[in-house]
Length: 595
Ligand SMILES: Nc1ncnc2c1ncn2[C@@H]1O[C@H](COP(=O)(O)OP(=O)(O)OP(=O)(O)O)[C@@H](O)[C@H]1O
Ligand SMILES: [Mg+2]
Image: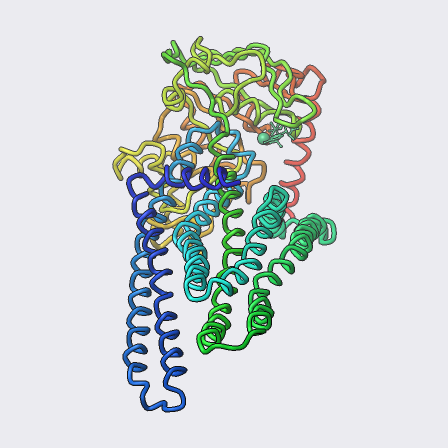
């Protein structure tokens, strides 16, 4: 237990760097301030003593005023030292928070992209923000307060021993019981486990709440309110279960602890009864009244330690969560990276399954795409198109088989080289909350404004820019700025234009707001495709009729492949898809004509 505690602190101190001395200074200062804060009690004792001595000639108590001022002076000194302690602790805590975040972000940047995609950026962001915030609070406030809560009762008990050791010893008994209860019951492994479950339930509930809100448009259009609310409700129920469970588990130890912490007071009264059996002295009365006065302080600080224990559990949980991110495995980098010889892509018996899935998302696919060839992946939803494309860009590593670019296994290409080789336009293009200009410039950070504008023009984005009064400086996601899925894809294509990688993967958005948008995306993509090796994932077959080769993917396998004409006359899945597609186009045209 003790060892683990030190482990946590030294873990945190690692992130403090040379600022760790500020933490140590804050702990020393906090202890000092706690002890100095007890000095006023000594003066109160002196005041009481004088009053008792001069009784009943109270006008002879001439030192009272002086003692009173001394008490105030020491209280002020203690406060000033405590503020200094907090300044030190904040300095270190802030450094730790920043360094922890940086460490996690650096790791996340190197994670397989597929992992970040499927884990959910929201969840990862929450862990990064929450765990570093929890350690900040712990180091800045909880830890110095904990030192104060330990130093105060220790100092008080020592003081009680000095004035009257018998009363001191009696007071020690309930205090020791309280300490023991706290250590064994509240901070034991069972409580740590409960705390973890509680945090998990909280995390799930937040995630479900986001999901619920995000799903509102779908839910409303399909009238599925009850169904979708059910998952959210379950998460809330689970959270409630853990909160109640945790509270109930705490009930008995908490009651015992509170009773014994407050029992000091009762012990004193019993002791007074016993010790005064042989008569009462002035000194004894003085000490007894004084002790009764200060036991309330003792009780309060003991109670504080109980809550300090809770913050200890929370910070341990935060560290575990951080480790959860830091321990996520990176894709291994090759020792000496090779350079692809050309821009061809070859898949050799590639098998891949997502963690926890019971069937392969890609189930033994082999194919060759020559440099400069344009191919298309089509097929039913869930057939494995996006997964296959993400394997080519090495967002994941294959379970077996090999992905080769320019004749070199992607595992033997440096991630940076690979990134420069492949441009990927995502199915749900994500734009970051920054200006359009900066969003596009991510494609090539050293591009000039003029080059960005050129890319925007090539990607048919000028109408989007003109829509906003701030033009390219419009911040995506700010108030009143809305871009449709198709518009977002065009902006992503502009990014790819700027990057100008020789291999291009476009995962077409599933639905476009209007046919105009669809045409513009196609036009932008055609312009970008020139002289490149292209993999187009298409949901609208009109896009692919000109492809050099079309692969129909179903259930993670290649069901058919060939040119549009070959496939169309083969009377297979593609023939069926093509006739369905034409029906839907006719339906759309018919509808448009009727308006
Ligand atoms: N991140 C993920 N984690 C677990 N399973 C996944 C993940 N992404 C996809 N899958 C599963 O892998 C299979 C292939 O999905 P994939 O997204 O590659 O299909 P797709 O052909 O791109 O479909 P769509 O046309 O709807 O985009 C599906 O069964 C899907 O449920
Ligand atoms: Mg897909």
